[in-house]
Each structure stands twice: as C-alpha cells, then as structure tokens.
Length: 401
Image 1 (cartoon, helix red, strand yellow):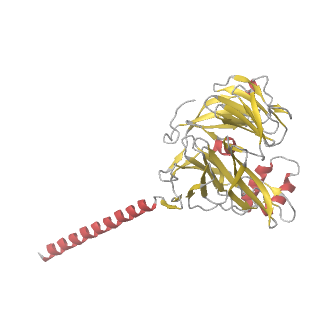
Image 2 (tube, one colour):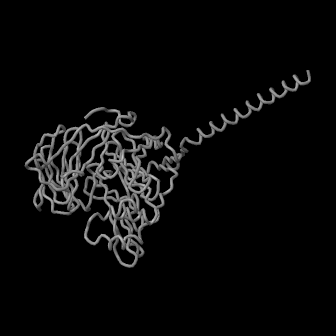
Image 3 (cartoon, helix red, strand yellow):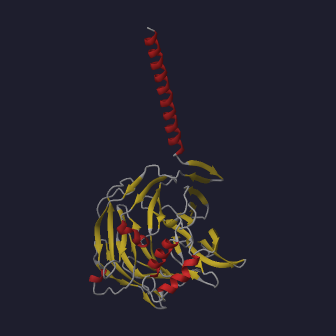
C-alpha cells in the first residue's frame, strides 16, 4: 500500500510539473509573439514604427514567370544603344537619358512613333543634362537642362516652362525633388530638397535629408573618388505620386522617413539590422565585377581597394509598390539582396527572395500590380521584359500581362 501511495504522489508531482512547464512554454510563446509585433508610438504628429528583425508574415522564395517581352530592335527606326523605361497601363516609352530621344510603344508592343531629340529648340534637350521622362496626369513631361517640356500621349509638344534646378523629379505639377552637393566646413554635404512653386512662381525649399561625404567613396590622398552601389553611402528616395508621399533614407542606416507633399515628416520606420562585413577577398571580387574589362583594371582595383568600406551598405534602393506598400532592396551579401516589404502603416510584412538570375538586374526593376519589369541586357541587345510573381497574392494580386 505504501508503495502504491508513493507512486500516486509521484504521478501527481509529474502532472503538476508538466502543467507548470506547459504554462511556462505558453507564456514564453505569448511573450515571443508579443515581442514580434512592431512597437508604435506617435510624437509630434510623426508615427514611429520600430519593427522586429524578422518580417511579420515570413520569408517568400519568389516564383516568377515571364509574361511579356518587347525587343525594340525589331523596329527599323529604333537605334538606342542604351535606354530607360517609363510605362503605365497605356504605354511603354523607351528613352535615352544621355542623348535625349524617346520611342513610344503600346502595351502590346506595337511601335507608335518617336519624339524628343537632341538640341536647343522647343521640346529638345542637350546631351548629358540630367534628362528624365515621367507621366503627369495624361501628359508626358520631359525634364532636363532646367526646363520642363510637356507632351501629349502622341508625343506632340504642348508647351514648356523653366525651373531653377537640375535634376528635378516632380511629385506634383507644383513641387519636385532635387539634390545638390555643397561644401560646408571643408566637407562635402549632399542634400535632398523639396521645391514647391506657388501661383506667383515663387519657389519655397524644404530640406528632407542631408549628410556628409555621400554619393562617393573618396580617394585616400587626393580629391575625387568612385561610386560602387554596394559600398557607397548615399541618399535613397522614392515617390508615391498617387498618395503624394516621399520615402527617404541613407543607405547605411535602416531608418525610413516618410514625408508628405508639403515636406512634413509623417512617419519613421525602423528595422534592427547589421551591415554585412566583407573580407579583402570579397572586396576584390566586388571591385572586379564593378570594373569589368576596362583598360588598366588591375591598377584601378589596387587604388580602390584600400578605401572600400569593411561593411556593405544596408540598402541598394527604395521603391513604392503599386499597392502603396514600401519595398526596400536590403543587401544580404556581396551582390545579393532581398526585398523587404512594408504595409502602408509601416509594418514589416515580408522578405521576398528573388531567383539568382534577377539579382544583377535590380537597378532596372520596376514593380507592377502583377509582378515586375526589367531590362535584360544579357543578349546581343537589351530587351524589356515583364514577370508575374505567382506566390505573393497579398502584394501582387493581379495575374497575367
């Protein structure tokens, strides 16, 4: 009997211990779930979101399928050796920002004609003067050389007006972004400015972000330097024209600042993250890829190597997605990145891992409702391509071209 009683006591103790440990485990899981939610506070009308290190809804290995291809070189009139892309639901426009000329295509790839050319006359722009194309309502705006030329959708000139800055990127017809570098206390300081134009033509300036020694890795013992995207600190920005929002950041720090059309800061978004360290061997590989096969490559790499940073930057680029979410090209290793996706409220939702074949094409990527577009320069001539993202319907809900 005593032995049975002792066994009963032992079983009771084991059950109690199991319940206690189970309670601890549930408590730990609850605390962990609570810790994974972003911390949110509001100070002076600015919403501040400090996200956890991991995305709320996890990591997705992107599955992408090509849905459209435009090879402009099949058109006899197309002779651009290099081009950028401006597109919306109506048109695809390919243009050369260095030697200004633009070619218009329909969304199904039919060639519709050419407009803009190099020159000094109406609707013309000199070479290498910061030329840029954008849609403004139902018009196409060409911006460069401190002027704006307005065209209709057929490429017919509607008019021109002068501005004070070069470059200029319009958020609305009466305000634009520009950047400049100035010397302050014997240091180069780069500034991102919002310029607002009132009805009298008076321009008001709001400084959104500034910082020293940005935009260039400086030489050690002489003026000047070089730019390599993974190692050069700089200002990044992206505009959401539909909602009149501007996101800005410095590449070395995972803190996004969101401004409205008046230059007022309305949100700050943070993610705890560390910059990726790189070895000397990593640096050599990065600089070899950057230098290509240019003449004197070995001597150039020897000059660049001592001043290249020991840690990569945090980000490559910022981009607003068609649904209003924010995308951050976060650097994860030499020549590797993931797209961190934030909702409109600043919550870190997803990390999207793209297939390797897309990683080197990040600078030409634009995002669509169904996925993304890019310029594929792997063949004899560059080709415009669109891809559907098949496995992230919350962010890319539309299917097909």
